[in-house]
Image (cartoon, rainbow, N blue to C red; front, top):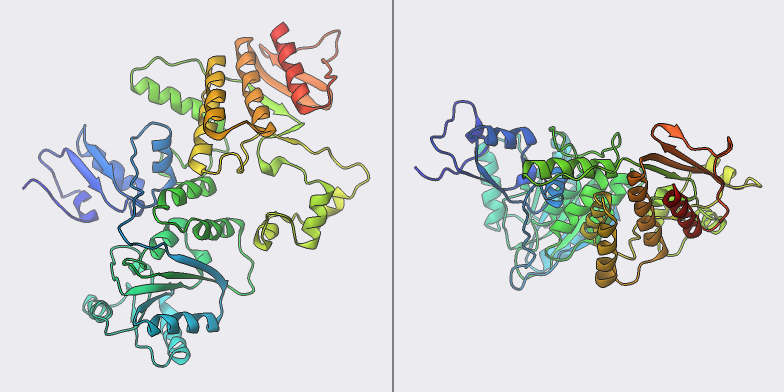
Length: 468
């Protein structure tokens, strides 16, 4: 026997392989890290090929950092149309109209409700909303013969609506089913929503996905981001963009452990990228460059949007509930608690920090933004920054001020590292530099910055470090 096709059963302890050389893992997002690592332990050298429409953040980041090879297929099947995604509060009128419209064109409907104990109640409610619809119920706790009968009825078009749990997430290809209604969509992960939406639109007909939200309950920030992403990335072949957004929301996870998501808060992104690059280079037998070990803390720079302090006009927009370029949902997530608003009305508000990051308007693709951040974090020579600036101008056009400040900050780190500096901080006009474990002072006092504009201040810091 040369090829074995199976489920998780293939990695049980009582299964042995004589000469395992290749492992192909389909639907990679449904396997845990422990299961994947077990394949590797079966033999000292085994090639692993993973397939997924939405790779987990950990696997995706391994590919972005060069630890794994990755290729993408973005060409959709011929005549396939993108699924129209509608995010609405729970409304029985919307449900009735969606089902009725699908029935009018002789189609079928998936209704996803992920609670087995009350699924029969939902079936009765759907029967009252659309009496003429033939409704069948399927879930994982049913007997296998009974579930097979239900699925056979639906596949053979003997039922109009399949009310089910997430057992339909993958593996189903029913061209006549072109509407899916997902109840409590806020409870699902981003990759789950993408996989579920992919159950419809399998043929040339226009398909619809309704994501129903609780009417009165507030949504968590991450849930709002997931729903915004699934609605934004509705074009064909957008699985990779969905995975990139999932990486931004959930974090890259633990490269050395089983955690498949989570942010590297204890280490920091810059240091993490450098450590990972060193490890990958060492394993490949390449020369390892010294790591940049400089902490930069500028009180006049915002290294991400969350660090910025809103201006008074922005506060007024938050209070009124409207702002240019933002939806009501986004404002709800951005609105600070009432005590913070009171603090902003203080006669002496804190200064607004200048942005020093890559704006979404400059590089819209999440994959490219993360790649540029990674390359900045891994830069160890001035030539690395010069080459990156040329590439940015060539690919994305002139750099906005926020990117200029970010690049200048990285240049300061590289210069400081060459001078043996480990920490640079600014507090007001004071410049505090730690070199060889000691703070630099002149005449018992810290150096003072004379410039007020962020760009001029960074240039002043560069001149000071160059003179050391």
